[in-house]
Amino acid sequence: MTSPPEAKTRELDALIIGAGFSGLYQLLCLRDRLGLSVQVLETAGGVGGTWYWNRYPGARCDSESHAYCYTFNAELMREWQWSERYPEQPEIMRYLNHVADRFDLKRDIRFNTRVASAHYNEAANRWHVRTEAGEEFTATFLITAVGCLSTANVPNIPGLETFAGRWYHTGQWPHEGVDFSGQRVGVVGTGSTGIQAIPVIAETAAHLTVFQRTANYSVPARNVPLTEDFKRWVKENTAEIRHATRATPNGHPFFISERLAVSTPVEERQALYEAAWEKGGLQFRATFQDLLVDKEANDTAAAFIRGKISEIVTNPATAAKLADIDHPYAAKRPPIDTDYFETYNRENVSLVDVRAAPIEWITPQGIRTREGDYPLDIIVFATGFDAMTGPLLRMDIRGRNGLLLKEAWEAGPRNYLGLQVAGFPNLFTVTGPGSPSVLCNMPVAIEQHVEWITECIAHLRARDLARIEPDPDAVDRWVDQVNEAANATLLPLATHSWYLGANVPGKPRVFMPYAGGMAHYRQICSDVAARGYEGFVLS
Ligand code: NAP
Image (cartoon, rainbow, N blue to C red):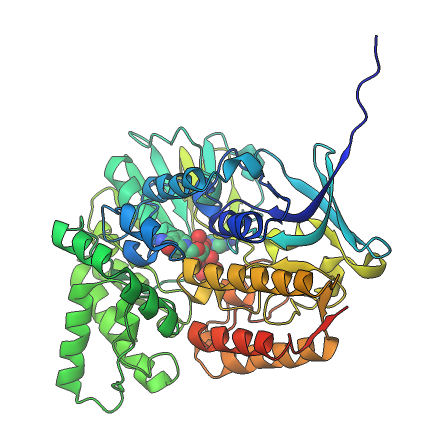
């Protein structure tokens, strides 16, 4: 018998981790625009990133379809037709597969491949990457495109392993789907995901019990099929749509009103909220300019939504629990919904307040709270993610002198512009903490980061430079700016939000995304590059 071939280390210019929106575009830019040798490694069996995993019932994007797409290619924008105001998960998957096929990207993506470790070798100035299957790669540049919401947070509730029924986390949903018909279902969690899934699960479950810890605001999405007129308008206005998403703080194709809630007469203000409620969607937040910076202004929006909850939900006790919201409107990521509050008027749906009586145990039969037992056949955890840092820190990433990223970030993420970490040369983090990312319409944030990284690498290569990393002083200044930007808003007042890492026990409480606005952030990054990558050390 001949001996097996020796495992070979593949040498690359760049290695990208992840094949979602970020990884696909980063591959296209580095391979086709710069001519680099590039490999993408992806855990999933296909492209799609977060959309590959989040297949729960009702999964749909909250950004409007005509702006939830790449804009780097006008032809691509014109040839793809979305069918609804908000794209559903399967349609987004079709879109990303279309992009991957159209630009022949899949040949450089290794699916079903999880990265175990990435170590920087200073002498060689190369990243040494190992997969869980033991394959090895080295690359000059390492780019993480791992997404912000891709590490499922399953709460550590005692007894889960004894549960006799089935349980699922929405972010790891089985591809074959779940049949709820005739089942007693419990949903834990009322964030954006729970709020999308609950109305759909209620349609087929025998009974649905919602376990709510923190009540949440929600505004109707008003999803509709797109008219032919609208589809034509999109094709004729690709440049304008692209421009609008680049000019607004959240990367959405609508502008924030210049009116202030506090100085608008009460009746007029109410009429504007009514109109925004009828229109639906995240625009509700744009009704007034001061909603996210002035608590008094925010209180008017919060009162309006609470009033809507009491109007819609017929059982006063249920309405009171749903409206008992402890944070300013939109200080946590604001959900939008289809019949969320209406669902509590169904006979087969009940609401349990697990703030008043916390979940204590999962028994073989169901969920036990301090007040009682709820027998269940299926438990759905819509309990969110170890957001932003989780996907990075679960890998063994080591920079200079073996410094572990997890140790460097022990007290919370520290980097420059959300793009690079001191001591980790040539590592770029697409939509990393410290960048606008989750506070922005994601494809807009992603395109900006990917293009900045691409231009940066082109700049290095054109000048025969081998390395880029941030100056630690620039990191300190940027961390201060991220904190200042958050503190200028009401966002930190939601003290238990995932923006702060508060949803994961033991995670440092640091406001992670940059809240100074996408348009402003884009300008900062462009200025840094124009000044010869100010704040970075190039060598
Ligand atoms: P999330 O916003 O973190 O919400 C998780 C929910 O689970 C919260 O209600 C939380 O309560 C609850 N929870 C967590 N652990 C619990 C426990 N041990 N016991 C009881 N309740 C518990 O997660 P998500 O809803 O998955 O959304 C995460 C983000 O994903 C969103 O904010 C959004 O950015 C994105 N997303 C987007 C879309 C879209 O575009 N359509 C859809 C879904 C998600 P507490 O609030 O008390 O912690």
